[in-house]
Amino acid sequence: MIDSNLKSAFSLPALWKDTRAGEWLFLISIVSVFFPVKIYPAFFLISSIQFYRESPKLKLEIWSLALLVFSGYASLSFAFTFDGELFSLVNLAKLLINFCFLFFSVHWLRSRDNSLLLIRLEKVLIAVFVIILIQILVYHEAMNFRLITGSSSSGQASSLYNKSLYFWGLDDKNMFGARIALLGFILICIPIVARNTVPVWRVLGIFCLAFLSLSRTPLVALLIGVFLLFWMIASKKWRMVLVGGLLICLPFLLEKIVRVDNLTSSNDGMGIRLVYWKAFFQNFREISPLGNGFLSAPEFLEKYADFYRGEPHIHNTFLTAYLELGIIGFLSFISFLWFFFKESVSRFSNVRFQVLLFVPLLSIMMILYSGYDNDVVLYLILMFLLANVHALDFDKLKFKL
Image (tube, rainbow, N blue to C red; front, side, top):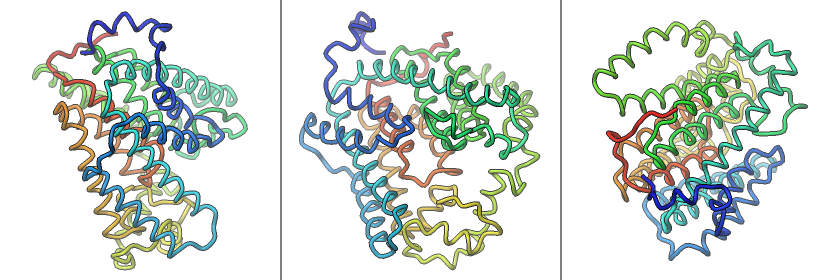
């Protein structure tokens, strides 16, 4: 647990005293991704420069070399396939800026004591999620709270997101839901590191936000993460209770959360994913071993999928990596994740904790992201931060309201 001498610093005035420039930029960078105006790339770049200035000599580990290979090959693929579209250029810039921020953030975090930064991060994320709640309630109020108890389809859920009312987060249901899940799970796990406690009220609060977002993505990811967390802490007796409770709730979860009746429907988000994945595997031979080119997923899906709804990727990070960048892109991205995981646990050997943190991310990457999104990068950075404060003993964790 964080040194008891720090407890006196947890009052708000003392907490922010002597906050260094790098810490301010780190926290502001996290908040910047929620603004409707895309200002986060500027903060990511400024922060990277400051992290470089505050860090000792940089060292290229295997994970960063794998990331360099992925980024370099993506840039090469872009150079050979660029057709003048601004969308492609913006996405390449996003890839390079996000990975640059990841590299310098991790080196900066590794070189310092992050105990106070963790508590400052907790305060910032709580404020961020309060505004998320306000944004979601604004959406629901505009629909007279007709969907407050859930939606019957993806289309109905998407209708909640009125772009004219958007001021915080993202105006896309799935992406906003995924952000709630990822950063929400980080917020759940911070007290585990800071105080050896599992905050039950916080778990329930994040679940409520995820439910109100009407996106299945955060709910499924959170269910997986929280179930795994409880399983790791529980004794054999309580594990039986946990499984029993899950079985009792399963009909409700399948009907109201997963919406299993609509999974294969053509107007359902999961049904669309199944169509895209089917197109990928049935037409695998049409994919070059070197990849079909940076951001070639739309062209592939438009040609081979039974229908195409205009998405820029195939709704699976790993399939997208192979489709666009071939064997080199696929293997370098897998290598990056694997060696990043090993690097994250190397200092304190928090293997179980890192597995716990990785699972929700991987579950979402299997159904949503392209892989270089800012949410993925932020989550990886915060995972590294949580795992590199001190060693954890799951037997000492306690539940607390």
